[in-house]
Length: 543
Image 1 (spheres, one colour):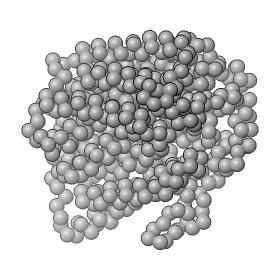
Image 2: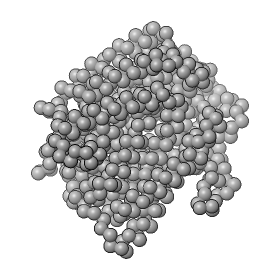
Image 3: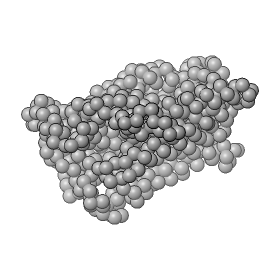
């Protein structure tokens, strides 16, 4: 047991726990019994709060653990996270403004609310809601993977239930203050999380190169390691087979980033369009942080860091690479701060994700199909209970299923959430795509994506199915026709599935428009997509 690290970690964890409970009184309305208040923080977060909230939401513990671990294991491929976070913000700059405006004007809490109003289709809204919940669940579970990696490095590496007990305690505390404070809790804690992360990474990228002989020596060590492996897919440079995968994975991930329900929740919680404009301009600062963080994977190679063997599975846990790097190369007190940064970095996005999933369940399943006359207070109560179920469902996922499978499921999550792009993002600009064509495109895109993912093996883990998201073009089969037979060039499955989704939606739209089938009633008007916080006759928050 690493006692110094554990004490520092526990003190900082206690600090954020107190902040989590205090947050219920922070800028609070008379009552939190409304989704506008509990689930969106009163829709009044300013520039600084929104910056920390969205940053804490998107740059998760899994990011800080898995991106450098991927560079440690696969080399340059792990850098896909850098261009995707760079191009994401220009891509979404205008769409998020329209999403905020129409949601503020109409009182929408979730992206599925918007789809329901835009197309007058409860079915399409239900599909978007279920897709969001399913794609979010493994994302929450992955926060636990990062937190468990830290706990394992501090000495909690037991097998069975006792090995997961510290994780369970942490999430019980998280569940309690999220239940009480709603979105205000992770918004307040995000300040502490981001400050810790910035301090830890800036110190690491200055101290480690000085200790290990400079970045030149670090890259040389990484090159020597990858030269000794038989796989052509790893190395400090991309190979001929994975360059297309790198590009499509980066582009697909950028498109998916703000389709996730927790991303939309962070957007809708902001005060106005100017706040979002400033944030979309400033958030790339996190990409700079991510780039520095990724390089720690190569630093771990130069330092000779080895992962801890997970006593529950008997296999090395690659997610412990960065915690172990801090454990071996830094003083114990600083390693404790780094562990707290990663651990708190798990709690913030996990809280936001569970709130986002709970909002989807409450607004687009419970209220639509179970209790149509639910009052705002009943909606808030249902969302609070649903957030508990989501959190402990994620804990059960980690306890009973191999965490490595959860990591693979995150790749699946990106493929899943991308299939909502036509119904959510494109619909912000046009209703030309027919609602039934959107349903058809969703079915084809999601179905084909799952089939392609099922057929991808992972030789390293011995898994025959769902072994990753990189598909060899040779495996593309269209009713027996293989357009790229023999090609070992890889591509991101999510990109392929999205193209299929869009093609089907366009073709079916052209067919249906000839039959004069109704495209539903649009509850929104053009002016809704341009409202701002100071507009007259704007719908009151909580109404």
